[in-house]
Amino acid sequence: MQIKIENLHFSYSDSPTLHSVDLSIDEGKNYAVMGRNGSGKTTLLKILAGLYKPDSGELKVPEGLEIGFSPEDPELGFFEKTVKKEIEFYPRNLGLDHEKLAAETLEKIGISGLQDKLPTILSSGQQRLVSIASVLSGRPDILLLDEPTHSLHRKGEKILGKLLEKFEQTIVFTTHSSDFALEFADKVIVMDSGTVLKVGDVRKVLNDDRILDKAGIRPPGPVAWARKNDIDIIPLNAEGAIEILKGGKD
Amino acid sequence: MKKSFIEKLDPRSKLFFSLIVVILAIVIPEIIFLSALILVTLIMVIIGKMLKKWISYLSVFKILIPLLFFLNLFFYAGGRRYWGFEFSFLELYITQGGLIVSVTIILRLFSIAGVAAMFIISTDPIQIETALAALKVPWKLAFLFSLTLKLIPEMKTRYKKIEEAQLSRGLKISGGPIKKAKKKIPMMIPFLASIIKYGYELTEALEARDFDDIRERTTLIHLDHGVFDYMMYIFSISLFTLYVYLYLF
Image: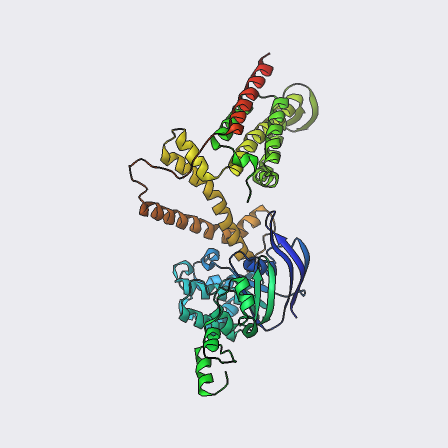
């Protein structure tokens, strides 16, 4: 267990934004935070990032744990003249070997070709990758991504998901895409009206109509497909479905 | 969310009251009168259940107020001397006149800013726009005014998002004022870029909706005076008359 939240309460003004939140984040797992707009997903991420302090309750974070946060609108944070310099920003602030770490991160994310470009003129998909790279370069133990699939098409989502699978860090991301969550998360945290409705295995939770209805989440495509074809095993994606049909295992 | 009594008032009656307070604060430089004006505004703010927001709006003066106070305290001399400081050619004294002028200026600033904050917090910008248009202010000017008011929270939100993005990438704002200002460069550059971009987007959105159309405009917002609005007018006029009477006689 890396982070533990106990009975956390937080409000921006008079009405509570988060209340009675209990949560544990385990090391090395990918978590998808899902729920309606205004259910408290982004606020939860910002509290985990240490940007907001809870009004009450406990947030237990081990000392020295580095947490990186990539915001929903990546271009809002860009200020350097080149992508490379933008990626060097975080490790430079931490006093690390920023040139080496930036070069490694560019390579890992596969955006070395963009290193001399101005970050603000890139496409939204490229900006998203630069934003993730600019957080990853600080080698955080936990990576928090706010709506990483926002403004990405399905193919872009796949590329991003495959990239996230390569990271050894614990990843917590918010998303409205249940297909993306099913394929690339291990666990899902379902939020409803400022509190955690359910935390559990992604296949179990995203196949539970009662929870999906309450939190306003659309059932993922593979779940709908498995139900229609009366198949017990939920595939993670189309390839998994083909495997099942062939008689193999997903 | 349920609207408070002050929020429900017609923007024109609130504007009338605010103008009366501003005129009185400018014309009558008396500590007791200015304090009473602040007290009246404060009571309205409490009735309107917006004390927290009102204080946060006025907190922008937290640097200006001590600065104004001390500058006037030392550089305005008159009447009895309380305390003095002499060094070479420099002579600084706290005098009775300096103290009165400093307190008066602070109270005047508070009474004007306080009533303006109350008006802005309790009135939707679109209602202000409609009220100004109803008062025969040219529509474009009224629109510009409401747009400026809407821009303040928008700029605040954008700056906060940028600040969060940089703080979460290890930026620590510490040290002396020059060091702190330098550290804020990663915030200021994207902030200015974002505001310029917002301006362009806004222009495009307005042009796409025929902003320059010369036909007379209609509005969906309906303004109407109620009993409490007439009471507000009577209260404002009474306040003005009382102040002028007490000040002159």
